[in-house]
Image (cartoon, rainbow over the protein chains, first blue to last red):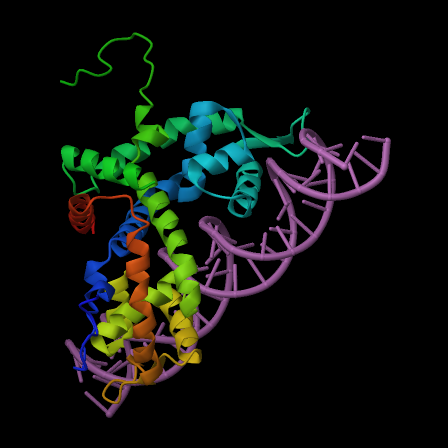
Length: 150
Length: 150
DNA sequence: TATAATTAAATTGTGCCAAATTTAATTGTG
DNA sequence: CACAATTAAATTTGGCACAATTTAATTATA
């Protein structure tokens, strides 16, 4: 038998779980946006948005990838990636072309201009490192917890 | 004197800082979106988006607040809040009115309907708790690190 | 081999999100 | 008081983010 509602006394429900300060997702969401905001002045110099920047990171490591694979890496779908990759293509940093063996698949490959951008981009993490108010071991701890969440 | 670039040997720059796996911001950004995605089925039942939900959390605690104060709490500006609060007003959950003492200020106050929604909303954190793959002490740790970031 | 099912991108529509600008109200200073 | 500076919202604009749908290509199966 439940200990709840077994009498007729007026019950005051416990709403603590609805307090903003008891949410884990909210500081996650807020911190994410605040940090991306701090990237902006540095990314503006490259002419990239944050989403474009993390996509370029993939290309700097891998040169060529399909839209599907990129989406799995970045947790983004074609609704976000298609216009963003077209934008990167317009800027001249990637080239998009259908796969010869399977025309459904779109390959995206980095260009020379995209590779060259890496030289400027390498300064972004340097400049950002001063913006993060965490000790190295705390950053590692946070990284581990976030990976566990994902 | 720096230990770097003191000779004429060809240098290979270290690009490790540009690897996706070495980013702290990216898992933060991805985890935030993935968790908000998990909220959706439960929030759909309330007819709220995640942003509307965290705004309602503030009203459930405080009843009345100005747009400016709400923005400070949620790390959001008027460009996001104005249309979102109009939407909540249309749904009948809040009432918006100018401050008598300072017409620049817009007060937002929860309605009876907004208060009533709390009864259904209280089940959201209950249902979500099963979706988070962290032990309670890990969650506390994560919470602390995120607060430090903010 | 038809055709049904599946798959990958693209498209569409809604809702953020934030920088920049505008509007209106208030405050500070000569 | 006049008027410059400041402040709070609203508006505008561009870029995501994602659910749902559509289109086109491929694969599986009767």
